Image (cartoon, rainbow, N blue to C red; front, side, top):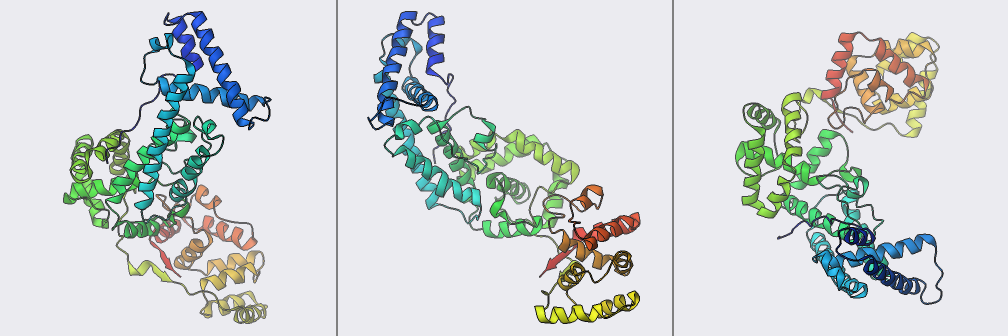
Length: 452
């Protein structure tokens, strides 16, 4: 694909441009006033368009929108011309030329959208799908309405599937708006998509590993897939001289050791040359724009053992727990009645410990207040570190996700729900465990995998 990512316009306002042209001696004050009068005449025509020729009255907001549209469209017509041409040019002619430019950009955007939809990736992500199925189609649909001309200059779409350098509307990073912003975004999106398409066959397995390793689903995350895959591709090219996504845990250790003894800058450049050979120069040139950003992430990966890469973890079966779901309601109520019969705390604890019940049922029992006050503390004292780890995993499933390891410090413990007494006393019990026990508990939590 021979995409070129467009350039930013030097001046974003026709009215500022005319002022600068007068100050630079390119046009006279009289000429500037004449051109502004032409703009006002065109504004009156657009007022009639907006009001379906029924009225000439307009709100301040709509009047500003019309003036912005005139400025935007005329600048499109002037984009490849010198300011000196303002001496002869008529605004309406430049406006018509600008419309032709915008219609061409609109068609380019439609072509890119159709291509992306045809080559859609097996990536179940809300933002990724929203851009292709809702946001861009909605904007293009607005351009086809009766007053569509007024939508060329501005878009309200979120464009919230992030590119490698972020989300354009949130950061206003491109200093563009309207059709220019949408096309610029789509050109970059298409280049990133081309890179990701190379790994289509491996992508489902990679995403499965990602979700397993991070403990989350990718559906609602603000992920940039291109950057995520670039690191995997980098690792594979450095280790095996071929682009791939699928790594083993041992591969990550080898890469970290390798990068400690080479120039990261040269390694990134070498990989981008290999990408150019495999996927085309336009994709490689685009990724080269972010070499420093990617290199910075690799530095953290080498220095701090940062979990940058996704890999197939070597699972120790000793730390895999298979949990069955809880009993049906009738069986659970029978269990609850049996426990509540014991007046003696030690008998109650002993009975609970003798039952082969699911951790889910145990949580339900605790929520039904089978203990009171200090009785919870006495029960928790009977639990092994392994049992405490399982309860913590179920109570706080978000713990240890992404790149965060369990620490069980105050910040960690504050994030865990403590609204009920059993929860509050459970967390307080963990705080009172010795430092050595808490370190062992963290080790268990970071290794523990629960299969339901």
